[in-house]
Length: 256
Image 1 (spheres, one colour):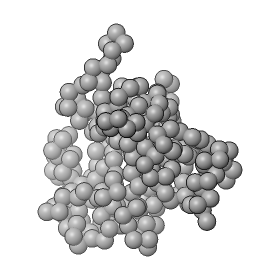
Image 2 (cartoon, rainbow, N blue to C red):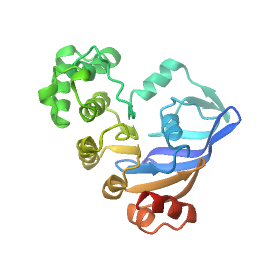
Image 3 (tube, rainbow, N blue to C red):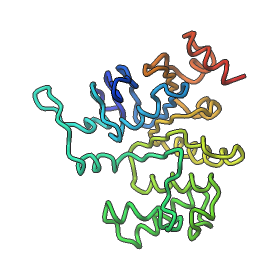
């Protein structure tokens, strides 16, 4: 495992009952880069994302984030699962943005962003408020600080969700189809926030069906199908000239 890697997944398997969802995934994401996972529904993309922060436990293989083994300690070649408290500590360094925004409905936009730094990291409320306002500014929503989620559009809620994840000052951001629940005209604002993050050097692993975003922002695009990595390459290579017939078939239906 090299020091330059933020994510290093080695032969990761994940099963639900008898169903193998991930079948020996190898995936490396260098620090400061953006990797997009694409593929049909049920290919294992979201499960892979959830394994990275131990929301799902891997059945076999090793998964490292910034050099640390995720979810387990290894002793004499045997893996021992760490406590939920230790797993939560690992997770605090990894921001995750879901399809659904999962904001606290009874808290304002600013309060949603302040919650975790105050409760989890012990940041003083005044400091968390200042940081929260800075983050709202960053996602273009400083004027909505006192609005409740129900008063915001889906795109605005998703941008608040991104700001909330950033409030924990993560070293890695995971995005699981962050625009799939949005009306088409709201997608652009969310993607712009993600582009700005990428430009600032945030390491990102993004499950997406937005090929334009992948083409413009990704350093690496990974095509998954049926629990395996079929092909990976730069956006020009994979989206412009895929080698594998399965990738070609998938992209031809998507890019029509």
